[in-house]
Amino acid sequence: MSLTDQLAPEKMPGAGAVDADEARRQARMRRERIARWVLPAVMLLATLWLWDRIVVWNEIPHYILPGPDRVWASLTGDWDILFDAALLTGRITLMALALAVIGGAGLAILFNQSKMVELSLYPYAVILQVTPVVSIAPLIFIYVESKTAGMLLCAWIVAFFPVLSSTTLGLNSVDHNLRDLFRIYGASRWQKLWMLQLPSALPYFLGGLKIAGGLSLIGAVVAELVAGTGGVGAGLAARIQEAGYRLNIARMFAALSMIAAMGVFIFAALSLLSHLLLRKWHESALKREN
Amino acid sequence: MPLVPLSERPPVMELAGINKTFAGGVVALDEMSLAVNAGDFISLLGPSGCGKSTALRIMAGLTQPTAGKIDWPSGQKAGDLGVVFQEPTLMPWATVADNVFLPFRLRGKTYNSVKDEVLEALRLVGLEKFQKSYPRELSGGMKMRVSIARAMVTSPRLILMDEPFAALDEITRFKLNNDLLALKEKIGCTVVFVTHSVFESVFLSDRIVVMAARPGRVVREVTVDAPYPRTEEFRTSADYAAHCRAASDALHSAMEAA
Image (spheres, chains in turn cyan, orange):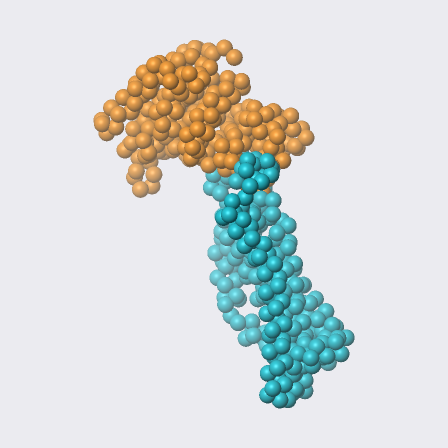
């Protein structure tokens, strides 16, 4: 794609007369644009309707499966409790994500600068990653006094590895000729890191960040379940557990939908961030003409 | 600028008895000696495996020779060398102007202090309008021009080019050949140019160093005494054809001897 193509498509010869094939292509693109929003919405409404009908037709009692109307009533009726819980879970998630970014990217840079440090520590980062957090969490809550710190630690353990591994990959994926060029111009180690490796690693880092965003939420939820924070200061997962004990299934669904909404929000926010940082130069943000 | 006769040009860089043997025992370059003089346009011409790229890497200081020495008679400073690779090798996250600014930036200069040089270099390659564009918005030939602008922005004493036009289509390649010569006339730089194209080497250079493979070595030097400026007419002249034949013969006899 050359610049002239991009600047003046309307000045291209024959732009007024669109052939049949081109017209079909444009019509298809229009249809897809609309379908992108309409189809999922229709799908959602159909599912809700079917769910409601199944409950009514089979006369399922609400303590086994509540209909969507009851879930909605719980969502609005228990909003104060659920919203406080969401704030708590959200806070732990975001703090864990921030620590995962600092720890993951920091370790990646450290590993990149010193092969010896990488060789010493990397196996342990992998071990920490492959050991299921549910099995580490009970130990953490024995040794860590503060529940918040314990939950943060759990969520961090789950979330930091994708940032570490993708940033490491990115730091090592520098174009060889550019690396040579920096050497010829006598660049210092810091200039190379700052002006060459970090920008090269950015798309990889952002990919890892998107995964870490989802994982830190999972980590926070698992930590809450293990910590079993009852009563005041309980997060969404603890609310689900608590509602389960009381057979308040509607509230379980309501809390679950809020966790899902949080996950979607985190993913959307990180995708937007990634788009804003890469749209000017990276292939992934490139719009293709055909 | 008036062209100084070959024999009166002061040396810029001298290679003496350069040998490069890789760890596996493969001799990439054997006993290469070459004096690069100010204003030369030297082509290293040869088949793949003749060590021409290795020679260029040694000149750039990216590879240390196993034996022999490289000498810069009047000393070497940072920014004395400009390099153009086969790929444009631009930083995709930086604008065209920032890419050309890079050699200065690595020497701790601010953009404003060298803005004139950067814009002048872009003007010389005909891309001053694209200073704010990103590399992905440019065509292959335009990217290569940016790469050339970056190599010459510091007015280096020597520009090394490693098959810079090999990946371009022929029409673009001819255009860039012409532009490169016009550019050299204007700024009077010294160029060492690696290529495997006889036609390209004859069109561009006044000295062709013919190399052979296994082991990589210099077999002959062919002088192209056709005057500069060389234009499209030179490409179809009898003089050009004769020089191409001479270079081609030298290449063939080198390959048969191997």
